[in-house]
Amino acid sequence: RVDGRVRRRAALMLVHLSLLSLLVPTPPQARVRAGGVGAAAPRDTAVGKYVIGLNQYSHDAGCALLSLDGSVAVVVPKERVSRVKCDGGGVASAVEAALSHAGASVSDLALVVANNHHFRVSEFEEALPWRVGLGLQPADSLDPLNLLPGVPKLELSHHLAHAWSVVASAPFAEGLIVIMDGMGEAADAAAQADADADDAYTHDARVPADAEFGFEQVPATLSPHLRYREAESAYMLRREAISGAPRLTRVFKRWVAHRSPPELY
Image 1: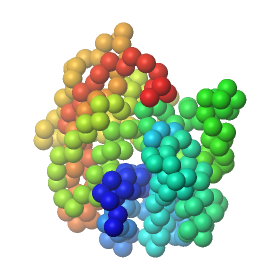
Image 2: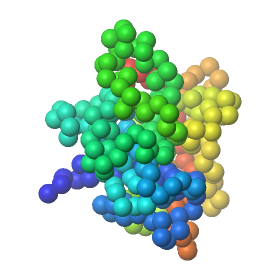
Image 3: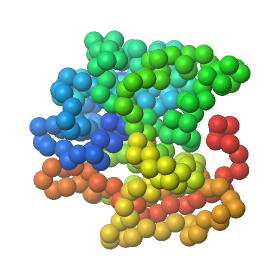
């Protein structure tokens, strides 16, 4: 018997794969059912390749590997490899286990989708050699199976990742998704991504406001003298009638003052 916590963690890691539903509507023949979790295949990529989702550099690290033809779905929490409960950090051992189970290699990966766990993954990884050199991060953070250089990457903001994990496992055609974890993405990180025209980063500000309920945030105006981090968020889920492809819209967000560097978390 698999306990509920493990099932929820598996669904959260599969969220990265369901993000692809944002990119292309899902024809019926492309829908995948893997342990009750649906996902969509990206367009114009050869069948037989894989998409891998990563949750790194915080608690409960792990990966989810999905073949684009829907024949293989593998979820590996790092703790199942290391035998350390809620193990975090890099995911090289989990990626190695997932690829081995699927009989695949890094060259078979078509896309990496990473969860932004309170800070930008791309910027964090740029500084990893310095962090490892100072002993701030373990040496295996630089393992190629953790960084997966040469594979196209997308990054997803934290509350949006939580929302898409609901989409991946919810049986409903329509509903309100409420995220209440008290700490998520920093407001200025999303603004900086837009200023840099960073198309590899999907964040809340790129999700449209809901046409029926609109969008409200608290505080309504963010002070230019403070940094803010998302505390709670609400989204509307609606699935298209014919294809069943999910669409998210923004309804509400509460911001809290951000008082310390996110790496401290």
